[in-house]
Length: 383
Image (cartoon, rainbow, N blue to C red; front, side, top):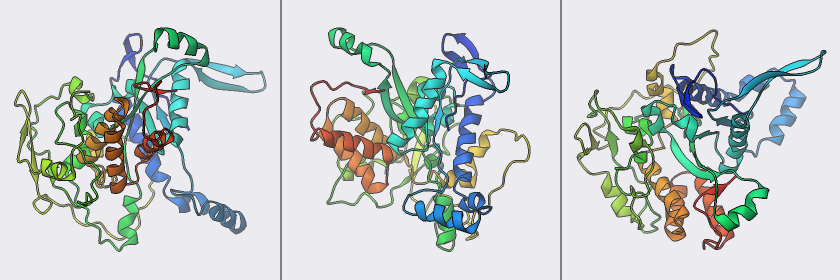
């Protein structure tokens, strides 16, 4: 299903919106909660009779993920609401380019092997903490075949749209149950906050593939406790910068030692990030081996920013560390700057660490051209 977040926004100018009541954050939270609920397979098949249930489960047994799967596209824009149909049947619908964009984002989740995609228009409406939790996946430009000749003569036309996702490993909620509750559930606040590397300052060099030194060893976690409560992060710092990451490939030793720094201070001195060992970090109690229960809402729920810090929300983010964000960001920049050797190293390093759909997509795109950028290569994807 596609979800277009376009309602209850105030427009200051064309396509310039402000979410007055955290609408974007609520929409993102709804998608995350739905993705978690979809993993409760028994709930969706328990009412089926034995024969169709067995046939369905046998058909899907080799497909990874839950029995019921959905993709989500989140976009902000204007739409026209109206009724379409006849006197016998009338359906309410929304028509606009923003609706089509949301549908495109939903369909593109299959290409990147993700559960959700959001546009930069929607991403800008999120609170700053949630913007940092999101990862930039790609940058695309919409076009049609009629514009190909014009583009060849005068160059690319139009605006580039950045695509983001909120990474989550929902299977982590069931790992404790499968393994008897022996999984270490300590999650640092930096891992929960995610995309720190979208800042221009970054947090150390990214990972790169290195066969001589394993990158799967535990790295140090970064504590965000030293952030001052009154510090404000400029929204410009939340966007990736072409100059914010190194242009040359870094080795694994450099990536690991980057997290050994004791403190990193911003230019204005408002906040600092300190690195600590796993053994020094405050650990949460180990979870019970009892399987997660599906609790459906029975009425409206009040929104609070603290919901993103709940145990289940932190657990699904555990593997997406700042190193993962910086490595992918560096690989994406190298890919579009035609440094495919460096991009390949970054994406393969991520694939060694986790099964990352976007990294796999770009590796396949480079493999189609024998890892050499074609002459007509653009610094953006085409939609």
